Image (cartoon, rainbow, N blue to C red; front, side):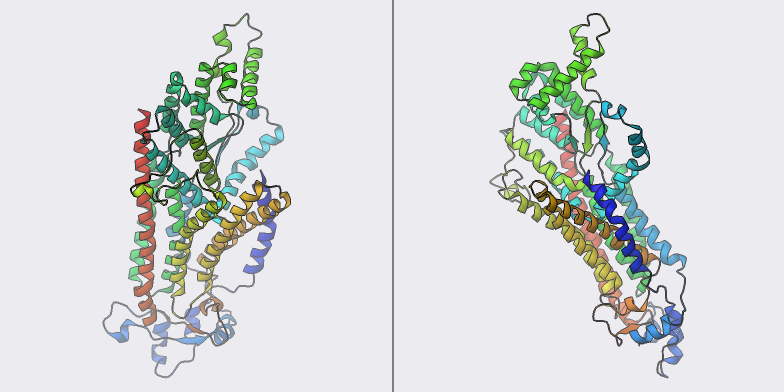
Length: 588
């Protein structure tokens, strides 16, 4: 597995880069004390203390008490006086606890709801593990592989969005295809099993041939229904796994919005709101990734496939399997299983043939099964849909009505340029990440006299690297199928390094610098684009500019961000309900 090894090589380099950036930054300057030292006119001097300590109330009707006067200085003065004085303030509890409890912990909980790949070994693999293999699996593999996958999701969210959307869209179109007149019971069985089992990758068994044989046999079709019921019964409950955490997340967001409305013009509140909006893409991805039909326990999926294999064996002999279409690998696997059963019963006198050829003994827990991670589900779904088309299932887009538009019914199987289609869907999926990052950047950008500061650049850099990783992923998957091995290895190392950088330095590091107060310094407050010694900094709080931008931009952008996410979630819920209704009806 090249992923973890490539990621491990990048960690020392990223650690050195992180500490080299973080060490020279002066953080948490006491700007209130520094504000009182700014030379002002005689007219403003009596008001300077109140202006620097937020003694003005925005609910007042008297303009003299409603807004604080602007205490303005330059970047050079701030560096020479504020930072050189050594007057630094320790972040109080409200500055780090509020964003931690309101945004970071709920977003982390939603992140852990995302389906990640599991690896179910066969009994032969499990019991033949070496001592080193057991130690590795117990102390390293059980946490290292999920950690790598979470880093990939955070570093390359566009690929995760693309995989989740591809599978959800495929479920939608396949359920609509069940009602086409050309799709009879055989085709409907094929569609049903693909919808329920497409999250799994069976490495050591010819499962697609088995599914085809199962659906093609009228006397064994009930096995497909039984397998579907087993998989469907283990489907994770949507109300407890998604709806409840999302409701809690939205409830916390509503409380933060109310608090922000009560503190119009407060810079700390606006930046906290920006980081909360930034994490919205995790909420959206959590909903998309839990709305497809195959969101079931992987053990149940394997059990369902074992039922299908058992039905194939009970209704076909080895000779028939070879004639019907099983390849040499399939026939060899079946033959070896029969030999194993024969040898295990050799000590007993003349076993009865049904006892000797018991399919339950042959295939129970003998399938190696691995869940497909989100960033690979686009290509996995594409392959499954093309397989359905090759087996005579009518999944063509209708020629009339609303479903005749490509946006509602993508032709996965008929595209003449699959790599271009892959790139286009990656870019479209990246727009979900761009929307959250752009809203967060606008909130931090419109803080008076700051413009493109550290926080806005943090959000922009994250979206930019996410775009680079989305394109690199397409190049990496394309080169994997070519003979350019060295180029593929170089692109793979670059992809994992940039994904780790985007996760560790930009997302986690930027959030850490925000809640610890590292961004509260003269360099960030003056804006980092076009900065010079004469760049202005407003040290007073609750000025007219603060309140104006709070009413005009901050709350409106935040409402737009959550409103857009809410509409996408409603569409995903509707698709899930329709798919669930169609699958239940097919299993009756």
